[in-house]
Amino acid sequence: MSLSSHSIFELLVGMHIVTGSIGLIAIWVPIAGRKGGVNHRRFGRLFIRAMLATGTIATLIALTTLSDPRGTHPHLADHPVFQDANLIRGIFGWMMLYLATLTANLAWQGHLCLKSKSHHAENRAWHNLLSQLILMITATLCAWKGVLLAQWMMPGLAIVGWATVGTNLWFIYKPHPRPLDRIKEHIKALVGAGISVYTAFIAFGAVRWFPELALAPGLWAIPLTVGLTLIIYHQRAVTQRMRSTP
Image 1 (spheres, rainbow, N blue to C red):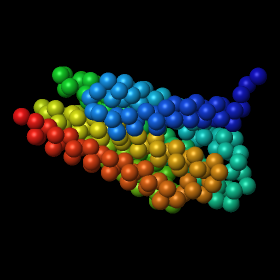
Image 2 (tube, rainbow, N blue to C red):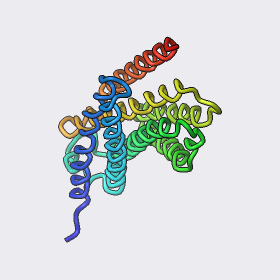
Image 3 (cartoon, one colour):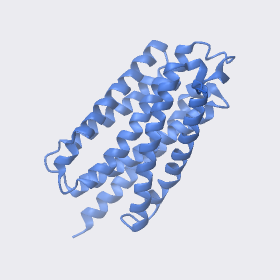
Image 4 (cartoon, rainbow, N blue to C red):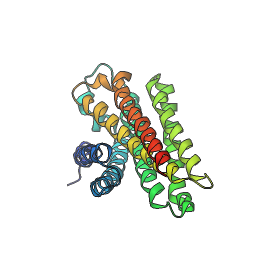
């Protein structure tokens, strides 16, 4: 017996919730705990793996939505805002696809920038450069579809993806990054992955009960504001600590 698109979608959503929840919890140990300790490394690795799995599953969720928007979202059949299947594709397909690749991109960048600290050229491995290209494409598609649908939140969110690719490439091609550069990149990337998955969980999770919240920019701005604050705080803290170390 073949599975319907809705059954496949619900199975993927269940897996997405499990892996995403693990990551949402695990990230707070490295953020709040002692830096560089056993728990920092252990939960950091768990977070990275959870984010890579979550991003992969979210990509499949987005692709099922793009192929069958009505079949995967039957609860929106009578919703006045989502009568146009193209809007479902835009919000729950193209934007979800972009956020999925953003999450995986940042998780991998955060992992690789420290793993390759003794061999910086490894950051220019084909898979990492391909990740930048894929993110640039999905961010641009998200922006373009948002313009076509007059959903201006989508181009706004795409700016984050473009900025991510730009800052990633700046680090990747920096000739001789200092230890401080690597740690700051590590913080930016992994907290950024946390922002991405928290954004998706808050917004898309709320949509299952209040679909109109998918279009509320304020809801999407909450994780971004908190995450950027954490990035700035921890980058400044590590800068001050390393500069004061003889």
